[in-house]
Every structure is written in structure tokens, then in C-alpha cells.
Length: 470
View 1 (cartoon, helix red, strand yellow):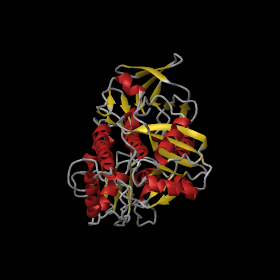
View 2 (cartoon, helix red, strand yellow):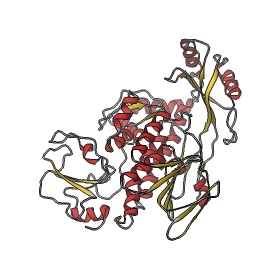
View 3 (cartoon, rainbow, N blue to C red):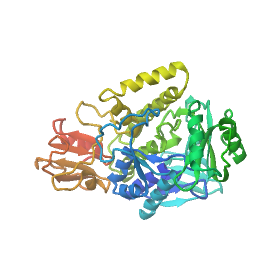
View 4 (cartoon, rainbow, N blue to C red):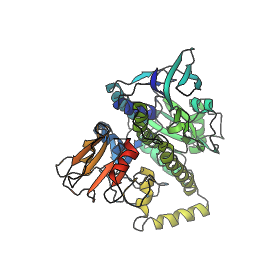
């Protein structure tokens, strides 16, 4: 029997399994598809996702493979100078989803993560002790917990009978990567003209020698049916008057603007993460990032539950913390399409918001929404609790995130008078005389959020709350 079965080998599932492996959890990833996807839905990583990777010491791999861009313009495309952000990574990292997945898979292999491809899940049953997962070939696997990371049409979510309320898709787009027969300058000129009246259309270089295009579909289809290249080029001609001599498609896909949030993130011994728990339009590029951050929040908590030291209710804080974050992202992606409409009313609201973004703090607030730098979990109190910390440089010359690569909690102490005795192996105690965080001491959770800071009550109570009994 496994400790954990992760269903879905996309970025969320692979990252979660890698986090579990860091803590010695025996996990397996089951993936329906025989090969990694070639479809490029996401095009980059936001600052908080880069921080998450840095907290485990692998951000440089992703930075070396991508290209950085300013964060201005990522809220409804309103172009403003990039605000000053409290992060070492104040930019968007341009990196295709396929590259993100490749690097995550390499890291997972280094951790010894088992991934079984071509293994569709068709049945699920649970009792008080474990969950039984049935595969298409009839094999049955048992695990103490199962996590569904199997996308917006999650099989596991449907097997659980969990409600997925929200709005169905009212618009759909076709997406493809291909070659063209005309110069890039000609493509750009046509696209610029079309986008004066149709902001849902775009064709441009993909960064790999091909072109990537997105075009509104004609109505909303059965998304289970894959598009054809003839359907794609036909829509491009209808919208732009030319298909640019498009040929040799590398891949095709379709997506809609459905917006849904699962009613619960946990049903007994089964949890949900990523698109299995929430779907929304891609505005702001938040989907892949939201899933990675779900997995980062869940990984150490589930590992603690498996190891037997989790305090009561720790695993339930996953839903309590992450579901409101997803709800906020859904609201953001509901608002942005309204600001892209070309009717007089939406245009007036867009002009007003553009003016407001010139005021101190407004642009930063919206950018922090999109990048997740503004996420604060409600842990009580009005101090630092619940906030993420940036990768400050310490008095020793080391950076803070270097101390957290092993996925343990961290008591960072300027005074030298504190102790984490009794929590060894779960919490590291580091005495540092720098004032990088502006307080005498902080207790950080493995995900880099503040669990306690000096002056916020008894340290021992907060150690026990997040890391179990001494």
C-alpha cells in the first residue's frame, strides 16, 4: 500500500509528489496519457511561483531556461510601469508550460518519484483506513490518501460526486502552434489591425521558430472533441481575412471561459488541487501558478499527516487557506474580461481604472493579486502571521530561502534566547543578528509563510499548533 496516490502528472501533481518525496512519503503518480503533453497553455511563471521553487533550491534551473519580462500590463492588459515589489523576482518568467513540466519531471526523477503513465483511473472507493483506486486495466491500488490533480474535467472529482458550481463557458478559443508562409512583419501588421476590434485574437512567434495563434471559436463546442487544423485556419481567415499560409501544426487545443470552484477541497481521504479544484479563464496567466502553489501548501501538511506528527486540524487548513485564494483568482479573472470589451461602458471603466492605477499602491495591489505576492492566510492577529516572507539576505551573508531547502519549519532568531527544543527534525533554529525581517524573531512554516513573530503570543503554542507536540 502506498502512502499517497497522486492522480495527474501535470505540473501540480508532479510538484506535489516531489514535495511528498522530500519528506520521505511513499507516493506514486498515475497519469492517463502515455506521454507528456505537447500543448502549451501557460507561458510563464509569476514571482510567487519562482519563490516557491527557490524555497526548494531549484529556481535557477527555471530562470536559466526562461526570459524575464516586466510585470506591468498583466491586469487586463493595462500598461503601467512595473511597481516596486517585495521580492527577489520582480518580473514574469517567460517559460513555456512544456519546459516547466520538463524541469519539474527532472527534479521529480532526482527525488525518486514514481510516475506511471497510460494509467487512467476509472473507480475509487474509500474506507476509514485507506482509498482504493481502480485502473482501466482492472488493477487496484491502495493508499492512505489520494490527491486529485487531474485537471478541470477531473475523473476523481466526478467519482466523488463533488459539486463544481460556477459559470459554464460562454466563449471558446482555438489555440495552435504552426508554421506560416509570410514574413513575421506582415503577420504583426495584420494582427495589430485586427486587435483594434477583437482583443481575443493573436498570432505571433512562439519563441521556438514557429508561430502560436489564438482565435475565437464559432460558438461553444463539446470540449472533449479536439479541434482540427482546418477548423483553426478557417476561423483565422474569418477573423483576419487571411490565414497567413499557416501549415504544419505542432499541436491544437481549445479552451473556454468556464469559471468554477469545487464545493470542498477534501472528501475523507481524498483531496483536490490545481484545475481539479478550480477552473477559470487564462487572463493574467494564473492557472498553472495557482496549482503549483496549491501543491506547495498541501505537500508538507499531508506529509506531516502521513508521518504521524500533524497536529489536529492541520490538513484541514489546506482548504481553509487555499480555497479563498482560488476564489479571489476567479473574481479577478471574471473582472478582467469586462475590461477588455469594446463597448462604451467597459471602455469608460477601463479608462477610470487606468487613472486609479497611477495612484500610489493601486498598481502594486493589482500586480500582487496576479502574482500571488499579496496572499496572506488568515491565521489570526494583525501582525506578520500568514504573510509570505521575501528572500532577504541574512547577517551571515546567506539568503533566507537557502535555510529552507529541506522543507522544514524555521525559527529565525535575532536574540539567541529562544529554543525549538523538542521539535528537532520538524523545525530548524537559526540565530542570526541581521534585521532583514524587521522583528526579533519569526517562526516560518515550510511554505515560507509566517506562523508566529515576536510579540504575537507564546512561541511554544504556535510551534505545537503547526508542528505537533514536542
